[in-house]
Amino acid sequence: MSTFKDIISKVADGNTLSPSEAREAFEVILSGSATPSQLGGFLMALRVRGESIAEVTGAVATMRAKMLPVEAPDDAIDIVGTGGDASGSYNISTCTAIVVAGCGVPVAKHGNRSLSSKSGAAEALSELGVNIDIGPDKISDCLDKAGIGFMFAPLHHAAMKHVGPTRMELGTRTIFNLLGPLSNPAGVKRQMVGVFAHKWIEPVAQSLKELGSEKVWVVHGSDGMDEITTTGPTYVCELENGAVRSFEITPADAGLDIADAKDLKGGLPAENAKALREVLAGAKNAYRDIVLFNSAASLLVADKVGNLKD
Image 1 (spheres, rainbow, N blue to C red):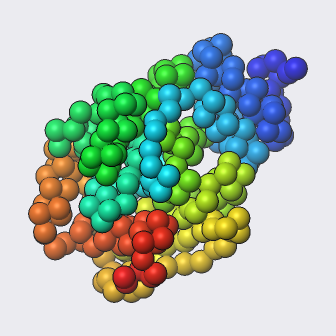
Image 2 (tube, rainbow, N blue to C red):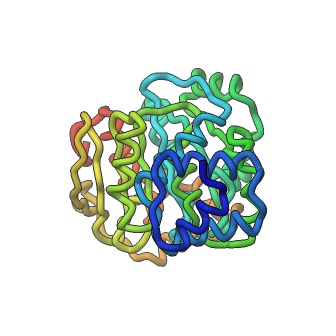
Image 3 (spheres, rainbow, N blue to C red):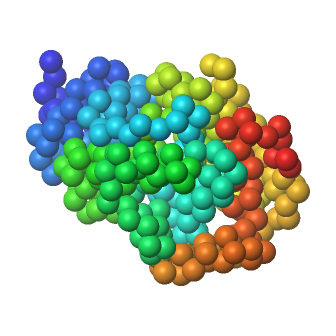
């Protein structure tokens, strides 16, 4: 068995960890046995070298084994972004989740506070009056009665308390931006996952395939967004029936116009919550269009529509 120092040295030398080594490393990290210096060095060494599919899959397996689970309908879907894209946009996946739930698809949304923008899902929902500090039974009740439930990551991944301070101090994206969206406490088999970099589209889809997902869209906007964008093309990697394929979509595929990036810029939680309320009240603007586009794709993943225009 390697020591954590051996593993750090291996990564720092540019070598890739095996799935078992990755599980071993994250067992040390999530048990709180790594020092802040070791953790920071390991995370940044991974980032500089580039995380592998085996490392991501092994790390997710460790996180899933330690998480507090939630019972959810078999057809539940998650709509989530990794963050770390530096776009500073509105809370698109949060609004999309509400719209998709309104269409009759149960949404088990997993999210956290933002580390790289002004407002994450947790901040926006709290500003809207949602109590995010609830346990698994109440979340299951929300899914049953309202068709949507929010799982606040720190409550379901208690082991993450060992990495939170270091992540905040680093102030940049790490492998944990990828792990959160892949570690949904409800064990959903269908997901819309936005990633912060084009290079991660296929690896994340492959990891989810290995982890047993049924149907997934992993997306990255040509403008850098970890969402389906309306400012230009979006790159998609789809997992369905065990097969992975890549393609591009554009706003025109959903009957939408091209948007200006400045019209998608968000702000503080109160501003984002206000904009979200306006969209749900019927406002017609760029925020509404990008939510429609992401909602259409999510309904495709849920097999509720035949194409993006439906």
